[in-house]
Image (cartoon, rainbow, N blue to C red; front, side):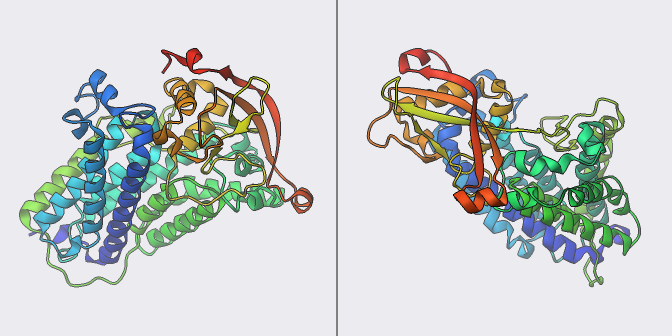
Length: 465
């Protein structure tokens, strides 16, 4: 009866998608465990306990509305790690167990995202939740994948790519005059070890890259819905583009997850598999109907004149709209945080784990891992209001040498006793030329631009943040 719903030719696609999504979940939970004490813990910059006191469950559904202690946060994180590992072997489970395991993963991670505040306001969080929700209904390897879920994964990939292409074309003029990559590799949030190489590629090649990007994001997504092998070719083009982006910068797991979605469009020789059980098929069709209804909001957003990026239209993070880099900054500014025991100095600099600081330090590769404080510091350099809810608390933590917050940094220049003063300045950064790198060994040239936060003591920060 349900043979029309079966798509055994996507058995390989299901294997790739489910195992890669389980890997991204694992990265997300490990990232949470390593960073939540300084960001969301009871002594963190924006404690979950305070958040759930003022934000009701209906606005931010989360397990942390029931308990929000640090032990409970750690327990949810470790539970996510264990279930992510179990998901790698879930193909052996019966259909009902598959559903429960993947649904539990989604509940655990959505509980984190919904109370994660500014640290979890990135598009790849909603993308992971929406992808993870759809994987619930792919089913284990011993039944045929439902074709409608494969279509929904392709529709999600379409929104990711086409939404990003539209926001670029409608946004910054540098995407239309093909000069965006004259700046982007140098000014992106977290450069990687090869970003400087990409920045100094010949400018005509940069224009070719932009044209290729427009084609990949504005034309290729439509081919995902063409008969095979066209859809597979389209998916391979998207995968190649994502690998190029992985080499050029650190974008957390956005590129890995987009690559994962592209695998959903790749078909192989069909294998003999039983059709999904009737109750499961009915459930899959109900979910499909839900996503058909939810499609109204992202479609309206993409077709409207005031398109927005990375917006969830509901508390469940389903049927979202996506997009990235609708505007490109032309000059890179970095927040440099320093401490001292005397107003006349010497001032010693705090080093972050990945964001540019010491000009001699080569940008590291961290993606698909995500360092949330470093990303937010990039936004603060663009507009200080991005740090309004947590930057005073961060500076106060430095003046107290609070271990949870200092663990988010690469280097504390005051290991024995905290400084009496801290300040934050804005510096302009640019990549060194080949000659400058050869002569100085530095990857960056920086110059002081302006004050951001004047020298402050603990007394100055009393009652702030």
